[in-house]
Length: 161
Image (cartoon, rainbow, N blue to C red; front, side):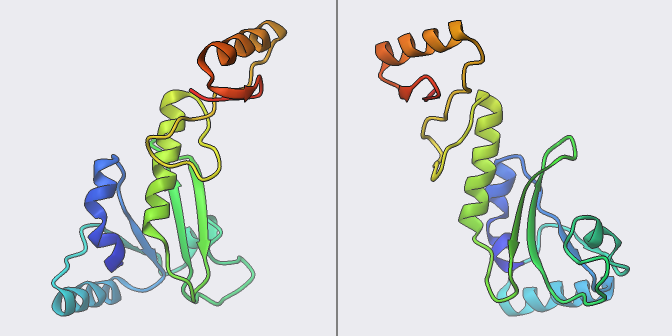
């Protein structure tokens, strides 16, 4: 919670809203928020949903439907403005989340959507994205000509915007 709070402005700059979800009670959340503030001076700038029944957590696959154990899970979901889950990261209890990677993945999704392409392996913000694969013979030859002219790929199926 603290790491996300510290990086909240980075998420907001990317037009993303943070939201916490926990099977603990609202009173428990208030106690966490107060304790975090008293010990660190950090105010959590995002809401935490109290999902006491685990209904939301089960719908998103955070807790198995046939298991009553509600032990902490550290899942991260990127959900777009249409309510579509675009990315799921599942961290085991003994491994913390990697906020820079979550921000990189958010950038990759937003850039690939905007530029109608794909962010390749190890893509970083500012790097070119992969152009969609041509779907016709004419498109394939056009792509080959473009690659020859612009030196922006290695084959008709792998070129960059």
